[in-house]
Amino acid sequence: MNRKLRNTLGLVGILVFLLVAGGVYIFVFQRGKLNERRIKLRDLESINYNTDQLSIQLRTLEKRAASLDSILSSRKFNIPQNLSSIKFYNFINQISAGFSPNTQIDVEFINQKKDKEFLYYEYKIAGNGPYNDVYKLIYSIEQSKELKKIKSLTLTSQISTTKEGVPNFVVNFAGSVAVYFSSDNRFATALFIENNLSTGLKYDAFFPLIRTSIPPNVDDLLDVQGAKLLALIPEGAFLADTKGNTYLLWEGEQVYLGYLTKIDYEHNTVGFILNKGGIIEKVELGLDKEVNKSK
Image 1 (tube, rainbow, N blue to C red):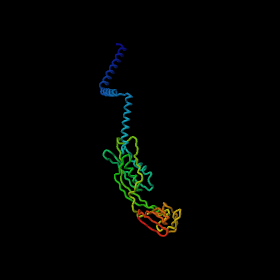
Image 2: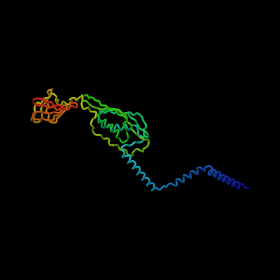
Image 3: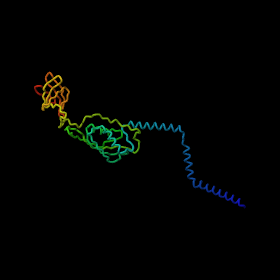
């Protein structure tokens, strides 16, 4: 056997060995992976990749999502997802932006707690201010779109006096607030719109009907107590107080603690209505004598 033939047979033998070895590797060692690939290929082939069909499905899902979001938006309260603990501080700052400069609000983060399937942050709030500011603060917390609840609250009244001696009637408050949130977005809307938190002016339930202190006469108005009617003139009434200061007043003009309500030229008298710490007095002054009538 010549050399060329031997080389040819050797190469054929190597080729047969490689084919047998490759077949054994593919059909024995790789059989499991091949079966997995065939199953995955059949699954992919079973899916319809028609773009028109997918576009119709997308529009249908978008309408359904918008409908669900509309239902959530129409609800009075929502529970946001994964809320930041800082957001409540921003909420208080926005609400108190229009409050009186004398209003003080302190907010302290306490802890994160769980209430059934929901979570909530607990805050401690305290401070004082005019009744209407405190009322709006409480109303805004309870009525805001993202669910917040006042868990406890204590209200007390207090009288503070300015440097000029003017009494201010304020309300002290202290309590705790729970700010709710969820770990998913089932109760949240895609577009957040805050509820109407406007309250308007409310009657001060803490304002005392009878007050022991009255404001000082800082504007140097006529003090009717002890005043005398000097003359009636077409322009109004000419009066003097106990210090000798003279005033020319007409109907409706303000005096200390009240107003001049009537000038009676026929009987030569003037009438006043005064509010002395919640006690309403009618005072009538004449040219010859002073007559007091109280209610």
